[in-house]
Every structure is written in C-alpha cells, then in structure tokens.
Length: 307
Image 1 (cartoon, rainbow, N blue to C red):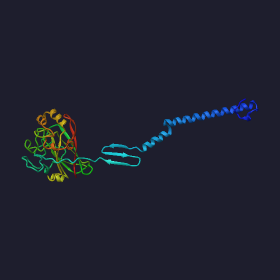
Image 2: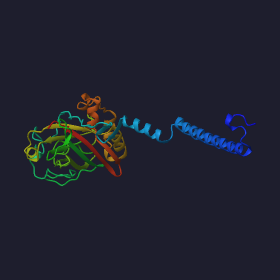
Image 3: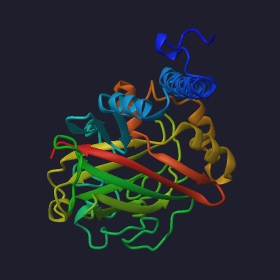
Image 4: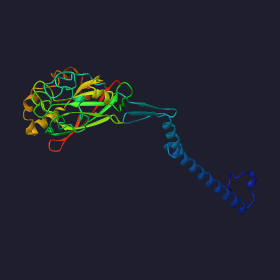
C-alpha cells in the first residue's frame, strides 16, 4: 500500500506510485553524495593539509628570528626590523723591549752604524742581503712575512702609510751590525703599509739562541719620514714564532743545529719578554704560518695600535 508518502497518495494508481519512488531514490542519492563530500573536506582539514597548512607556516615564519654570520659581521632579522652588528675587536699589541741589538739609534754598536734607519737602502721588502759595505745574503729556511697594521681603538681599520721596521737574528743566533756579524747589515729593513695596512717582508726563519724564545723584533712609525729619522716609534714589540714550526725547522735543516738545544730549554712562560703576556696577547703576537722546510714558509700577523 506504500505507506509514508502522505494521505493524499492513496488511490492514484501504479504510475503515480512509481514516479514518487523514483523521486525519493534520487533525493537519497543526492544526500549521500553531499555527506561524502563534506566528510572528505573535514578529513583534509583535520590532517592540516591544503591552504590552511600554508597559512599556518607563513604565520610561524613571520614571527621567527634568523641569525647569520659572515666574516666579522652578525645579522639578526625579524619581521619588523633588521639590525647589523660589526665584530670590530682587536688587541693593541703590548710594548716590549727592543733588546740589545736594534740598530735604531737607541744604543751604540761596534759595527759600521748604530742607526740603520738613517741609512740609504733600508727601505726594502727583501731583507736577506746586507746593504751596507757588503752584499752578503743571509741563508736559512725562506720566510715570507705579511703584517697587517690596524687601529685597535677605531674599529680595527687598516692603517695606511705607516712604516714598519723589522729585524731578527740569523741561523747562528747573531744580529747584523753587532757581535758575531759586525760587518753585516742583513735581516733588517723597513716597509710602508699600503691602503690595506699591509707590508710584506722576504726573510729567513730566525734561529733560537740561549735565554730567548725564537722571535722577530718590530717597530711601528707614523710614516717613513719618522722612521728614517730614527725617532718616536709608536710601538716597539716582538713576534713569537709558532712552537711546532720551530721544532720542524730546527730539526729539519742542519743550518739550525745550534738552535735545537736552546729551543729545548726555552718556553714562552719563562721567556723574559713573552712570559708576562696574556694568552690572548700571545695568540695575537704569534703569526699564522704554513709551508715546509723544503719550500719555505709564509706567515701573517695582525698588529694593533691605538692610532
């Protein structure tokens, strides 16, 4: 009798009933389709996919902080601001004695001059040869030394047009113009810093003699005129040779045979120049060095002065 279509459905015949049944079945199929679609959408939303996921990621990114580091510079970026802080810390090298063999006019010498700074020819990059009276060339393991001069009180900026005078002993532990090498003037010279605050010297690795750690002396002047007048050094100090390189050189080249025992008895802690410096100062005063006994070594060091 097809109950459930309403009281007005009675007595209208089989055709009418079939039409109503078809309409009912169509309506049910549409309803099932709608529920299936709605359920799938809800499932996707619950899994965090689709546009909702991208929106969440974008929101999280906008509130994040990213820090990146390049040489000497740290940058911090947020959604609202960007700040950059420059790492501009460098040490002012400590003042040290110029020792008994400076030939800078501050003491007397038994050799041909007591002030090599006023002598023609002292401004040179390759300091291995004598330039007063003789042309003797100092032998030893080659060393190319680059010094970077910076202003330690003003952001470590390079200092151009400053004069740097260096000197050190030969393979026998002797200093030119003094006892042991009185007639010689090798292993001494002046260079003027370029726009990058750099000078480069071609020399040899210094020996080790009794009572001292292997080292290179240097003096800084505000300009070449000040240096060649032999007055008013802005800084007098020394560089300490790296321990491992000293061991390699002294044991790897027979010309340094006299250095082996002296170096065994030496230490930075007991040295009368380097012994009272801090570890940070020693690190700054020790050149970074690479190479070999056969090929020679290259070295770099940064020197800071309050200019």
